[in-house]
Length: 55
Length: 220
Image (cartoon, rainbow over all chains, first blue to last red; front, top):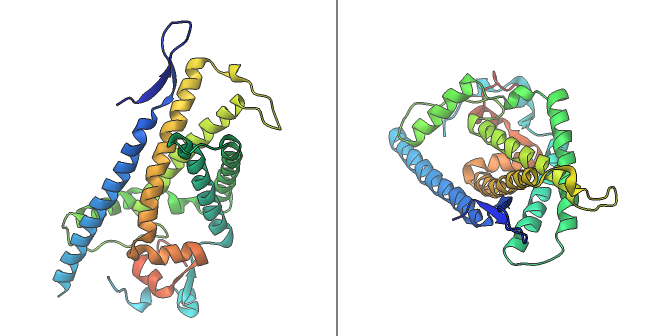
């Protein structure tokens, strides 16, 4: 997986940095989804503990 | 949910039954910013995902609109509102620690926050950094396109510097996608519906104020 995008000059020479790699987009989306799932599970467990403590 | 006794209401909140949380101007800013962000995300990422259309003009004009909105928001927050409502202090760090501890099993009662809780302040800080990065880099990128107001001048920066500007814009844009997804989750989760209503209609009930906020830290 690449972090950056490069262009190669038709005249040769070193690669030129041209931006972030769009291949990373699914990783950003995935990180958000994982955060939501973990938060939802922990919140549900915390609420269950609170209900049990109140009962 | 922890039920606070009525004596925690301020007289004003108790009399009206409602507490104004967001003025019309702040709600308009929020929803205009949301529209801009969704248009910018669509015009940035749909072409990358293979849906081709003339995206550039929509993208840069919406970006300029977002930049204007951000400038207005900063001026309003600094000169016309209490910017300390969003400042992260030691009490907020303690609150964040308590929130995390409760998620992992602590039964200690939370201290009530002011207008915004610590997690909201942290989120706002993240949004501020990312939006300023994407807007700042985007404004520089306007130098590379012809508009009705100026002619393009790609030689303003070296190729290496342009590369860095595009990297900042790209990473910030992808971070915004993640931030928007998390924001939608917190906006739609039932515990936060009263905040969603406040962002639509401007107010929370006196009961919600008493349950969720410390009147000493946020005077209604």
